[in-house]
View 1: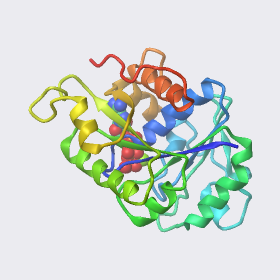
View 2: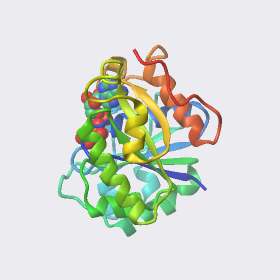
View 3: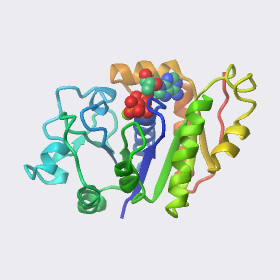
View 4: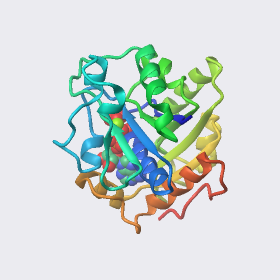
Amino acid sequence: MSKVIAVTSGKGGTGKSSICSGLGYTLAKQGSRTLIIELDFGLRCIDIIFGMQGKIKYDLGDVLHNRVKPLDAVTQVPMASNLNILCAPKDPFASATVEQIVDICKQIRKYFDYIIIDTGAGINSHVFDIVEQANTILVVTTPDPICVRDAQMMSDEFYNRGNKRQRLIINKVNKRAIGSELVKSLDEIIDTIGVQLIGVIPEDYELVIATGKGQPIPSTAPSLAAFDAIAKRLKGENAPLTVKIK
Ligand SMILES: Nc1ncnc2c1ncn2[C@@H]1O[C@H](COP(=O)(O)OP(=O)(O)OP(=O)(O)O)[C@@H](O)[C@H]1O
Ligand SMILES: [Mg+2]
């Protein structure tokens, strides 16, 4: 049975989709059968990230309208044989109930080791209902204090609902931000949000280029080491919490 991992954040643009893609890519490269389900309705992007724009035959919209079975809407990604995606509907007004998403996961769980759910931006009860069904919730923040506060609000709400399966990812970290007037240390961010850290991802222009061009993340990219470590920690293996930040 696969493990369902939901990637979420209070503020938009924290890097959720990039993290789903990077993590999905490394999990697949490490040998795990991995599926990324994109729930950002109308704002599809994982087809671009994996260089598959115009090559997606069916998406989640087709599944929700009962045109195809969930597994038939899954597309294999050429850059990693174990990696698969289920793209969000193009229609921004499409919607899915929690029951529908849970049912889709239930139908395809046996085919994958990991299902990663990419959520859209913003706090709404719908996102909470869906995300809290996951085995692990990855709360994403950047060092920006506004982003940290939004992550804290999000995480507090999960705790209030009794959900203790949260882990924190601090993304877009650079030396300039940490130890500055705005952020004293990574510990300060972790203490404010109150969620156990699972990884720190450096600000990485190579990642921006790779995802924008639909190419694999190069082995030289600093973020790749971070994704690799997070993937290992998710599997319960030992891996460093932080990578070298430039
Ligand atoms: N570690 C990183 N270093 C540098 N840029 C990054 C990093 N992670 C993400 N980005 C960039 O930040 C922008 C937003 O990333 P992304 O789309 O993954 O965020 P998101 O949280 O999914 O956004 P949304 O809330 O709109 O869904 C993109 O331009 C992406 O390339
Ligand atoms: Mg996104």
